Length: 289
Image (cartoon, rainbow, N blue to C red; front, side, top):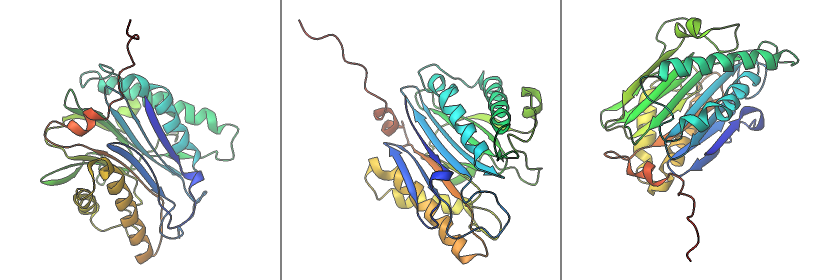
């Protein structure tokens, strides 16, 4: 398994955009186009990660509140525990996804609470947008808590699978949880990949009222469309960077900045051939006799 994690505490220069890319997957992050005008604990409280192996790709974006710690602990938990299993062939499927992901999020929530006991970030909590893409099986498995976004982009536009609408805003790390209590606070499901061209996760630094862009879905479509002019191996990185830069430009126009984090998986429909070609090569066989 190959993986990457951008930690907000390591990226605090306003206006700078940092990226990590691996073939068809990329993460990008900025502390924002300008300083936040609202009360906050740390300059950058976001985290973004990916993991990929032969079976699939995991993408995650977490937006910390009252400190960076909860977002970082959450994504480190995902990369350490379920990611190696979920991204191997046969490691996940739509039928068992709700049960498995709720158990994982419950464990991650408990880890956030434990890590906070001896920390100055005693009230740190976080949102989450999580996507697990299984290209060979043709499925996108997803889960979200809070107001981060998970867009699927096809020829018709971008649809946000994580939008919470006007409902209450929940966080991981707010208090004790069970899989049953989390089920009422999560939006999760499984959708066929079909002709999806890209999967794009973003923190609300892209969309926050009077901070981010007025049309987040339109900004995602524009970034994906523009990236198609780049070589195939650079499209995930270019679209991730472009979307964070779009968010930062909005921050400079508006009264406040915010942290902006994005994760992108580029899928070439039909067949998702680009993703299949990015799987790690098999181990070498025995030397010839």
